Length: 287
Image (cartoon, rainbow, N blue to C red; front, side):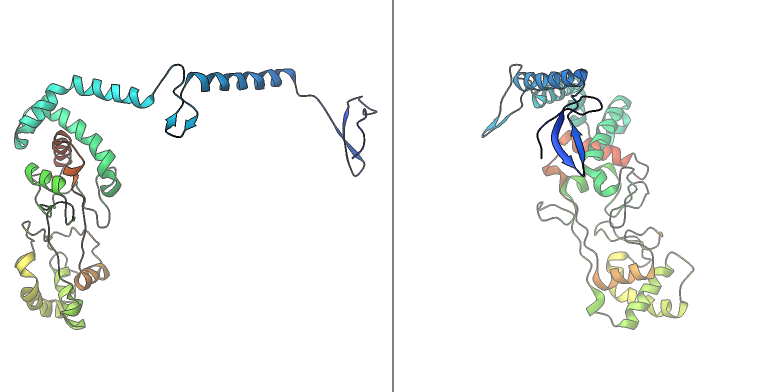
């Protein structure tokens, strides 16, 4: 550190800092940059005065304009609901099986249901409703609990195997790891595979057919076509919720599966329940 001087070449004042014999020049900032900087400071002060800005213990400063994004959103929602109040009333009053008959009501319900689906359902079933491992594909015609509008609405309303709704759909597959030995498990897995494909071991499948009859037909049916009253999957249609590999099927036989869906009736309004049911029904797999 040394005293401030002027550079001998361009007469610019130095800062007094020297590194390895090199003096640091104290070049002034451009005037336009300084004025821009001052303007941003002035704008920032004005903004915090005019709009809500500074956090307080119980809220924040309201600002001279008392502008509120929440209030604006609430007003927009109220305006939207007011404009569609007649359709909402009709949607709630119409038997859900008859909604698709009324073209205008059907279009409204489908559009509203699409918004509800994107906000609440796409996290599990995917933005395109094609599902994922453990989350049903809503585009096909394979329904564990039924694919009519009323059945879909019931599933959405009460959910699956949750503990928050007494009327939730409920079924539970036993864990056969402790009920069958290794050969029996391998055999029944091979038989299940034989129900939907030709690529299986016939010797084990033949043995597995009797094991399947003794342990599985009460839920999945004699032909493995499933039972919607119990949410038992159809094992003969080559549509697999947890994968069709031998490993995935064997894991299911050994350990069972226990997928849970929340009861959306506790979170959504009646019109939103009906609308999203219509949307899901119209995706392509509804009955």
